[in-house]
Amino acid sequence: MEKHENSRFAQFIEEQYRLEVENEYREETTRTVTLTFSADRACMFAAIAKRFGKSVSAFGGEVFEPAVDEMFLALSPEDRLSVGKETDLELSRYLTAKGITSVDENGETPATWARYAQFCNQVDAEQGDAK
Image (cartoon, rainbow, N blue to C red):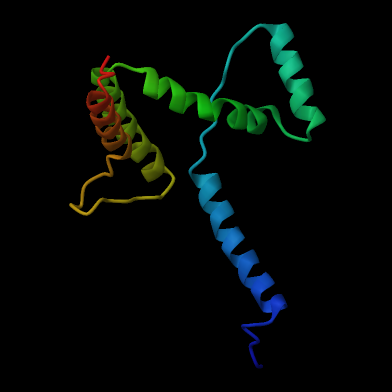
């Protein structure tokens, strides 16, 4: 059977394969957390999520994930480094438990957050904003 790689339908199918792989990876690299806050706010949050056709956990992830970046940046330089290292270790353990392993160019666990901490600290120092 002849494959029509340039047809829009073949491209559509290729896109479906790509999305399938990405969704599988996204599911494996997503972690659920439990939050506790006042019942009235929790009920309102659930109602808002429902209004937009989302589960509380999915909606919460979208709402709170950016806050993690902001909180990380607000940490002191020392805390950024220690929290970054701790996060990299925990992330590696979590992904390994899900069957996903990765190593950096030195064959070690990637130090994504620790490197980001170093970068942020360098930028802060250059700008004279070190905490």
